[in-house]
Image 1 (tube, one colour):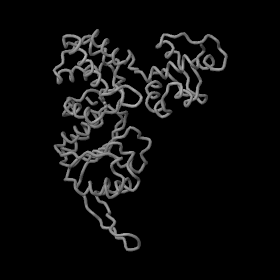
Image 2: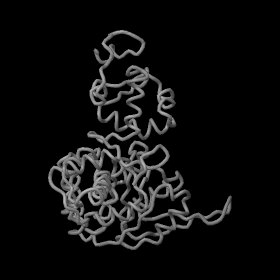
Image 3: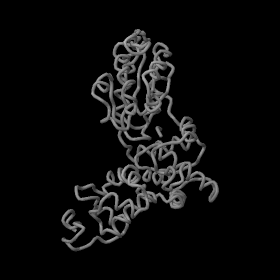
Image 4: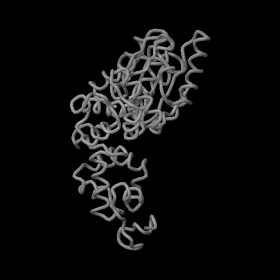
Length: 356
């Protein structure tokens, strides 16, 4: 419950992509849990965060600053809203890319109420001047506003009410240590297990007034890439198929038929993912092959292959990045039903790497 419609072509968003557009965010809002008790998955994070919030409430103080890291669609925004709800505080939502100047951040901070939660998404993309201002705001609840320019410039200290900053990032390694160290609680969001996603799907189906059986939910969960946002998106597409092509009830056969229409296979691979694997296997014998060459063969930009397709393929053990280039694993050959080359030598180096 924690969640990311897509055209599934190279130019638009993908059905199995983890990012969500505005329309989808509105749907997500209706499906989001309202407290930690409703939140599914992330057991350790929930337990630790519950202790932090309970202790803060008992002291009558604002909660420590919280840093949430992890892939898109795992529930970082949802948790930020739950933190505000648990602390009975208002929440202000913004993002790193929206804060390009220190003045932008100063305007936001100076308008916060005492105890308010400030959710800063993609915090690693904030500008450096704003980042440095945030150091003092987090630690001392104070910022220095510069008035004037040049030798006549004057720093005017501005006191801030105590607040809780919740930062979210998909790339925690890009955060500078001085910023990361100022968070009192940090948590890394893990990908979900299929059983957890089944619970997410059943809950969402109930909220959407959709009838779904256990096998149908399991089929969707297995193709959701461990991401609740994708699970909810696939559920809505299967719901559409069931309403148009069947009696509206989702079972395993309906789920399979619907996801076949949307080209999402049994492991969650879509057209782009399979295109990369098929090019790697059929055109280059499994590799190694350079990224630029592979991108040309697929008909996509290099960045699209590297940043959109590769992370999931590597995580699934279907593709490996080596110093010599991209290489398909034995699991990739098996998934596409192809037979790997038997030669242990040759230009593609497949035998050397995997003993094929």
